[in-house]
Length: 116
Image 1 (cartoon, rainbow, N blue to C red):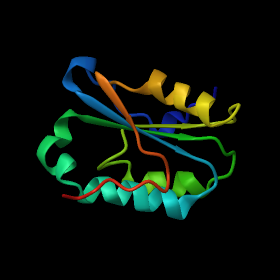
Image 2 (cartoon, rainbow, N blue to C red):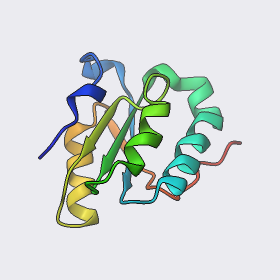
Image 3 (cartoon, rainbow, N blue to C red):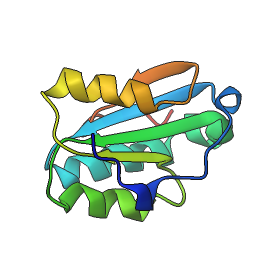
Image 4 (tube, rainbow, N blue to C red):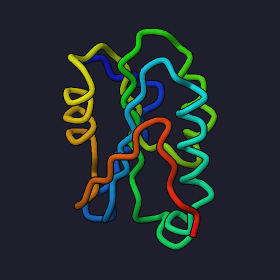
C-alpha cells in the first residue's frame, strides 16, 4: 500500500472528527474535482468543517487525480492514498482504514453533495 507522504497531514486526534468523507477515484480528475468542489460548497462543510475528515483513495498510478487533490489539500483533503488496489471495494476498505471520523460517508468521484 503506497501512501504519498508528501500529502499527509499532521496527525490529528481521532476524537475531533465526527464524520469522514471517503472519495474513491481512478483516473477521473474532472469527476473528482466536481465532488471535492461540491463538498466545499456544501452547508455541511460550512457548519461542521472542523469535525469533518476528507480521505481520497486513488487506485491509479498516474498523477491526474493527484493534481486535483493537491489543489484542495491545504483547505479540504486531510489524507490522500495513491496505489493499486483490487477494485472499488478494496479501495473503500482502504479509505475506512485511513478515516479518522466516528462515521464514514462514501462520496466517490463523480458524486455530488447537495449544497442545501
